[in-house]
Length: 333
Image 1 (cartoon, rainbow, N blue to C red):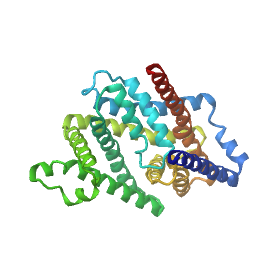
Image 2: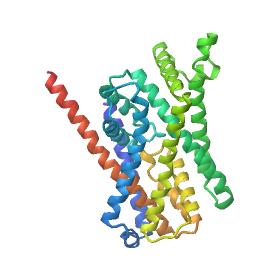
Image 3: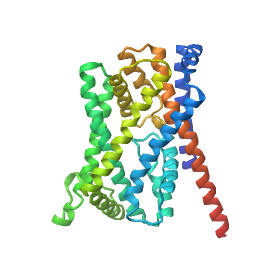
């Protein structure tokens, strides 16, 4: 019953986000918005979608590089499909890029043969490699924007929140060995650990495994570089959308709009950062000199390519895994 209520709540949140976005389009003018967005033809839409899928593939490569030394059965294609399934869960849950990790761990266990503990360690490490470059890029973006644009206060709040989360995660990783050396946990670690011994032990061992991965300088450099490349493609996609719609926008404004929008969208309000992403991007683009309808068209079309189309594709992948699971259950009876 609880799961049904949670599922209904997620659907309601998605519908609410769609209604708000539809209201924004209606307020600006449906005809005007459609005329602006008609610049994205079907071939261009397909090309931009393939670019987005390529970005998702690079993201899945971080998981693959972390897993290949531990499991010989894992393949890049299987990791990519599992990442897509995780993307679906992540898109329908209001979370700081964490919603799909449980799904990934569950499916990776089946494909790799690794334990939940090992996979949790890999998941923690992957988030470190993925979020640290974003945090650094966001810091540079905010500093640059401070001298160029007037950013909404929520952007600074979101950055502070993400910074605190990353600091706590790093503290958890690099203080894990303190108990082994001194027999005592760090005071902050004691407060954030789960109360039960089993959960505390599981988290401690998983964090230790993640810390070993993160401390490997050669592997870390490769994965940080890969994550940086992934994030570098994000403003490129927004710039291409603006260009194909016929707008000449400063690359600096595009970069600021992109990363501040993703930063604010990580606040766990609505699934996938609905509304918060679009609203922040529109505000920044308007501050950068774009007209409101033009900025809204860029933000909404960007979300179609980076969120809605991947959401539909990842839903199909998720249904495939569900059907595969059902077939295995039936055959085992």
